[in-house]
Length: 299
Image (cartoon, rainbow, N blue to C red; front, side):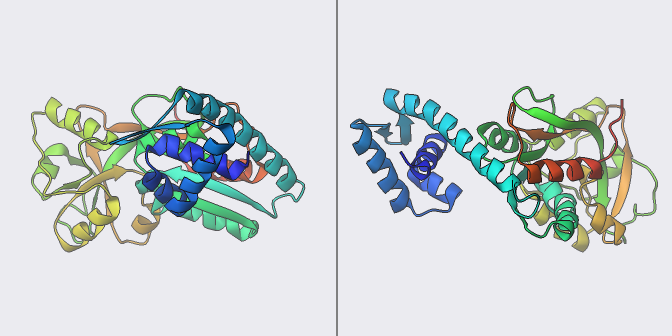
């Protein structure tokens, strides 16, 4: 069995359809279908039950999935050991992170690392928090940087801290000169927020309820990149992590306003890796740099 066929097989098992696996792998659906058919012919059994809403592993498919994970981990380990013979001159670092960190912080760490080790390649994905952890657990990414309401028990955690949310506005906003604002100040201006199924909204809504305040966003968007132009063109505000857009804040593109509230606005942040996995040398080196770029861990 070829490792390519096993990778395609596992992608279909995770995504539930060949089309979704194709989008995930950036591989033509016909190529994935062909590899699945070859596996089924080689094993003389069906690996999936084809259902109206997708593909589900058969009993044989579940056995193969367990085997495939072991085979691919062993193959990746061999590749890692071979690459390490060449030091930090070659290698790939796969990073999954929430969008807030993909805009500024992580690319800045990558740029600094690349300046010292130009032979190392990077793959960066911006995903919802839960999907970041899922990618790490499944071994589809090397490092995950994500928000979490509870400490992760499914990954190895290289860094965990609690960071306050702050308000973000354009430099010309009426509140831009304030050193501290309250939740009622937010309610007095148009607010743009991430959807309700995010850690940010969960914590903000609880804090508003504690003060008897209702904040109904003028704009709700599932990507921060859609919110930032709204701030530039209005008297709007948004909430985000205190370290998410340090570069743009430092260049004067936005103002950061700490928020006073009766209930904590802090969120957990974690840097995650796959449990019991020996990280490639390039990944470990980048992980060290990434953690060093984050705020010191507070008690």
